[in-house]
Image (cartoon, rainbow, N blue to C red; front, side, top):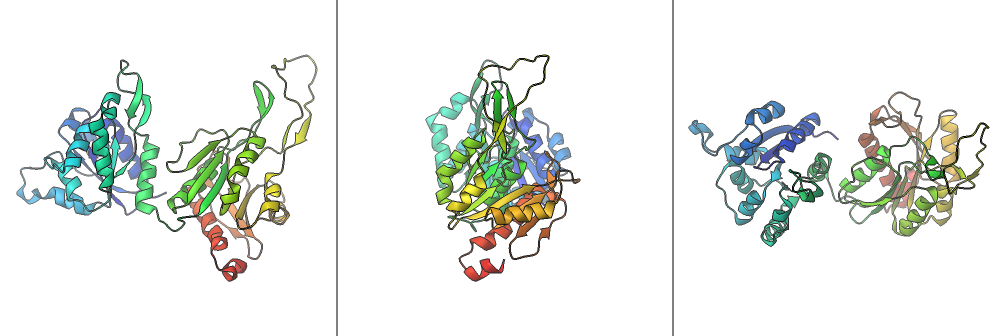
Length: 409
């Protein structure tokens, strides 16, 4: 998702996690945002202003007062300029001063002066994070309308500290929060969206399994896009290496049977089903209890069909909108159209992984969206986030109360 035309100010305070803010600036710039950075005096002990100036392509402010009198209200200028102010990292000291309304440097003065949304990304020692006074300051700031990207459990700055809470959230999580503030809506508030993603694995023995090349990226893009529209999203995903999406209910599965069972628990409440998972069509008839040893002869693996989850859900379908996916390498349109009808889908999304830009694991896709009463919509090569937006726009027509609108689609 592009942040083009968005103006984001970043306040960096004095903690070891300040170096991670460099990557945050790079990511925002990569997405097209205009970025300005302000640093506390303590932050300069960890990262130089020159580093942030180079990455942001803008001067970095380090002092509330400077030699140029014309710049005496620079904090007001930044406060008015930004669409969003992100404090990354936010130390316990910065949280305390902000909670008390203290404005004694450029960063804290900008926090107090801006009417734009503010996100705090805390990072500190575990003992500090646990202190009631720190948690009280956080609660006070949240009550005042400030947003937070909570820290994580993980390895802290020194070996002696080991693992603990207080580690700065990952950059993808912070970017997710930025997306939510800058592009999130309440258009789908109250809607429940169920997304499936990724591969399933069907065991052969304790160390081998049948699977496919799905990486879950398309399903995750759908879940994130639905969340940004304000929906209550459940994402059921097979094995993957992707960052979990804040605010989305994640359910981890491995087999087709587990996927079916997990869907069954939440399907009745769903308004929209996005079945992007690449479900195994077959599984071994028997799972060996021990590793099958290699021998001099060939081995025949007997397989049986897994349950057709979408076909089964078609029998239960009432108000829920069903969107299926068809990965085809030949007779693409014919096969997708047949699946659309056979499984009582409202929409089906067709793609061919052999086509340039649509390969497994990529960040782009090339799809055609089919429905019963409208010409197929062939999309050009787009990012998976953009593809997700197109799919949700089409699905939304079926979710509207007006029967006439839905029939017209």
